[in-house]
Image 1 (cartoon, helix red, strand yellow):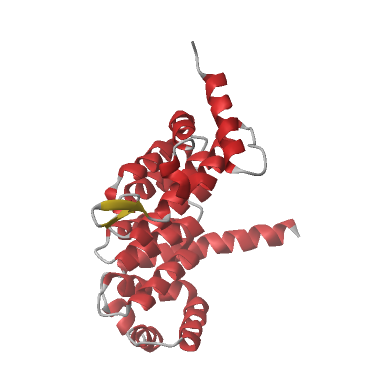
Image 2: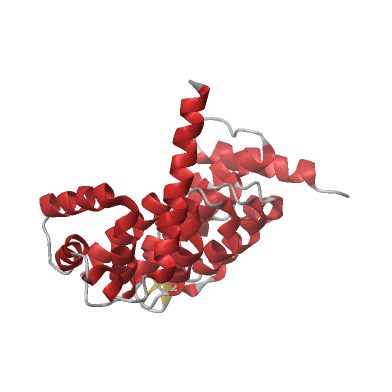
Length: 259
């Protein structure tokens, strides 16, 4: 039984190495256009497909496994293909090749298309790649709100504590606010930021949160601040009215003040 398991693992490694090699040689379109099956697969990726056909395309690609890699790479790199197909190609490349495809996939976190940037981050998260923290941290300042949300999710889900201060800095990024008659309002990503600094145990955020939670202008993010302070202090505010919660955190703040 152990021998059989070792053989399966070894086979998987061989397939991944083979698929990874296909990434390196897939700059030449003729690598797959000479093969009818791969040429047909490439042509399908060029089409606008409904949900059912996209599912079929996914299954067809997975069945070809490593052989499909040159096609997937070409789809990702070319604007000739619909965005949703390029999105799927990114995910499938990660699924077929695994972590060895990460360096190539990570390059798309800087792609001009926000769809590819987001697909890159999502795929790296699916591969549970915590060593790409700098890529996620840079994406926290992306021009696309959706990409910033995904980058935040990557850092939170992978528990990347070294980037807690980069997350906190999002509170000062005007991209995360919208302007209404020259008054800046917080977007929902700010709520995620507040909760994430708590989850990451960013202790430097504790003092400003003590101040913010007792300021009525932060009423819209009260629950998130209450949660985050709970994570940072290991204490829970009393259930019930906000006034009681505020008094609790005020006492906690005073107790932690060094005279």
